Amino acid sequence: MSSNVGSGVRGPYAKGIQRRQEILDRTLDVVATRGIDGTSLRAIGDAIGISHAALRHYFSSREALLVEVLRERDVLSGKTLTEVPGVVAGMTAVADRNVQEPALVTLYTTLLGASVEPGNEEARVFFTERFDSARADLAAQLRDELAASGRYSDADLEQVASLIIAAFDGLQVQWLLDRSIDIAGTLRLLERVL
Image (cartoon, rainbow, N blue to C red; front, side, top):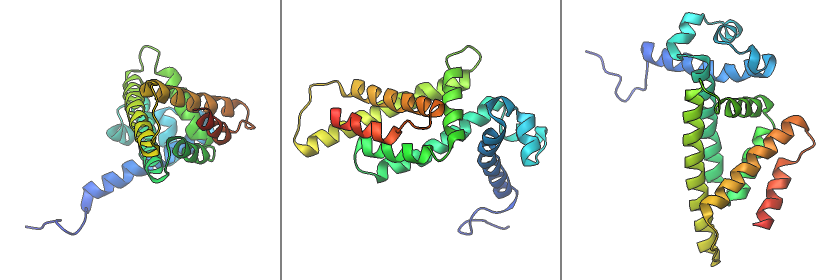
């Protein structure tokens, strides 16, 4: 009897994890070159050299795949937010990274818009949970920052968090339309106003 304990993941399971990760990594490339409308599961499969059936083995639908790409990118953004001190400074760092990946911003914005329409339940659930979590996390960070600085605010910090998120997302949309928009600079202005 053989055991993989202590030796890392190997075999077919590891290959499946690796293939799934490759699909996630390459999907954003397909979005970048073909746009959102050109990212059917079949088109993604063709572009990355995997059959439609194999792609469906990992993701039940195009929406599920695209949501998972965003979910994975949120993990990276979460790491950035915890590494950079300050709520707005962390979001500014994420914005600086996002402008290096216009396809990511396009994917996020397009799926967010689609999530409010019937038939896009996976995206709706993803964004509803994402905003709930982001508001709670930002409010807690704001509370900690206020306490650490000895300041007090009677503002509802969940509402302040909503404003910060709205500013961030709105600035990304503006940037998609006009690349001269300075997301990070505008977020720093918001920090001074707050």
